[in-house]
Image (cartoon, rainbow, N blue to C red; front, top):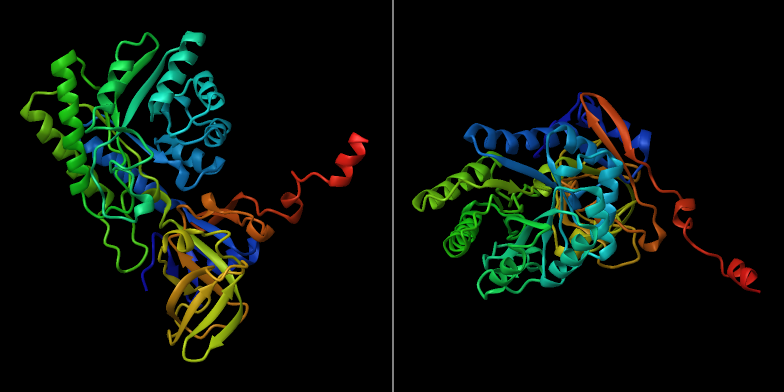
Length: 441
């Protein structure tokens, strides 16, 4: 049994997280329930930041908040000295409402609206990561009208493919994101912004994929971006002060996954960049990275209550839980794999093979296939590990299921940070046909 962060097994044979029994959490807040081990999040954040500090390298470690966004999460990130990567007006609004320092906010996205860009400009955020020529035109128009300066990075696709699922690999040439580094698009974008009055180009950004388990791909990407930076210096006497290599650092979901420690990714990245620029006497850029999953992924555990069971003789045993694809779409979308344990039977021998099914009206709503657990009964609590990234953030109200609550735990203390949705919440934005007809009559 692999335990994560501060997880342990108490004298009653129950799972604890952050010094609190999982059963206490389930009984206090109900299930399904997302539980975040904030001590582990802090440990990861500090590992990234302190590695840059020890190397004497200027850097920004920006939390890629699409992994999990909330007011409390943004406040935790701010206290840990992280910058913030947002990808929508909604994430930006949440960050500002959380009091996150706007100068440390970076705004991503491949189709930002005028409304979102105006919001970003008026909020005074630190940087916009420009994704395409349409966005350059938007920014030129909006900044000229407002007579307002903005820092930008150009997102480029370096043609480096990390070995991950096709849906989450974004660094290759065939991508909806960024300017191609190899066909002249990046050069065209550079020419459009390098002398603009209001747009200050800081450098380039790339993101080569997710769940990356070695540092080689980052080194290859850095080499290609630095070659372009050197070309721009040679041709235009322009030096990029920032190099952003994105995120994608892997975590352990199951025993098949073998990620590196955060320090190793950063150390190898620094060495690679220093080696490349040292040969050509290029000034060391400030390095930006964007960990998301690697900060919160294995810090999150989802607690479910086990309900019905079904045996298909000679095929499989199903056990059903009170959540499913409505709070974790990744198994259905990416064929993502998870590990789990019966939180109230941690010391019991695992003897029975199950497929964990959700309660949504979909045959494909299976959270885990073929996992060996102790013999379970209705009312037991199932803990699914490593659900901190893209669980709650991709949750839906499919089948009109309310989204779960979220709690933070640390040193025996626990507090709710997102309330459980109610049935009333589900219809709060609905409009009655009778009311509309009455108003129009």
